[in-house]
Image 1 (spheres, rainbow, N blue to C red):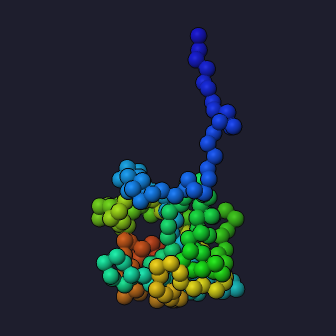
Image 2 (image 1 turned 180 degrees about the vertical axis):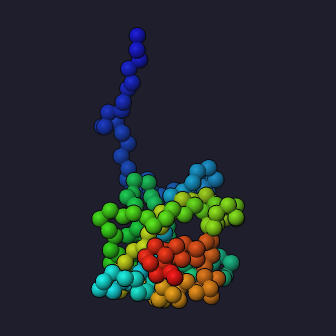
Image 3 (image 1 turned 60 degrees about the vertical axis):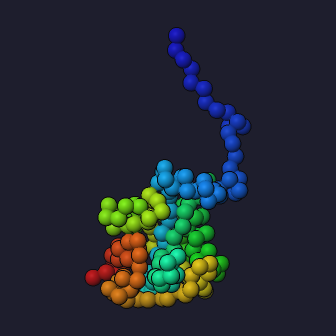
Length: 189
């Protein structure tokens, strides 16, 4: 006699609601201690008519310790959210609703960054958690204004953003990620 596998009926499956995508601070703390969390990183760029990257947008932020840093657009992917939707949401959250990100029809990350709470395992470090981030270069065509906790948005040339002084202003390995992005688009010599 063989056992029959029982598959749930589609009507029996729970449906996701936008409210279920948010965890309380306590729930998030528990999750961060037990499983890797999925993130997206976006390097906002301006391109010329031929599609070459001519400017890179870097956010200026204040850390909880009061340090001023430069940062990329980044954030968690919510439960039941497409990666492309997470990219748009985080770009609009940090750069404003008129940033007009140009997400390709088939978004492919230029790299996958693994952030660990223990420094030195990879070039990426996040003391809060183990996170896996899909990293994208995203052209923006609209008017960008820093929002949320960003103090400013600076547009730098690819060469300027890879300068050692700018790299020192970036934390958690985001400077490494930025250099990888510039190599990916052919702008790092």
